[in-house]
Image (cartoon, rainbow, N blue to C red; front, side, top):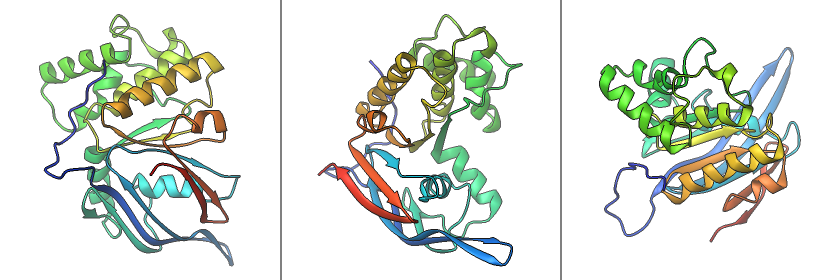
Length: 241
């Protein structure tokens, strides 16, 4: 059974973890302006599981980048875990990413020279964890994703599905407020993809908030909410209360 150590809440139900209010993102492309987001308002509560879908150019990747504090809105507000992050500087955004957000990418983004354990420990290294405590956390997370016997291996010695499990374990190292996944099954076969999604489902059942981008409806079906985007706007939201 997967367990997380999410902060307890004194309220009777989940609180708002993410609040977007009339968020716009405009990119300058030479003499042209591209409105990647054209006024997005959204609330995601703690413990939610959201899939973001839409055609190319719909704004879903831009939205994920803003949610991950990899970019700032041109205008509008973004409140993450009760902190307005809309106008933070680069150093402040970097700290937010390190403390509050876990990332899982399509291409895994593991460091090939490092072992599984060292890859999982990487976020803890940047936070200055002691070596013994960091190793203990990596062992815990490696076991959580079913790779407790692979901690001394390097990424090239693992299958694609196993590498993605390492990436998920790494994303959980700091027990972030939210996990963001960008096409996490895009480089996996159907069996490994389903195993990866089942791991996300287990993490969500344990209380972790998860937001992923996908093109595949059968992948989005694992989420409790499906957010469909078009032309920089939310077209519709399916699922949930």
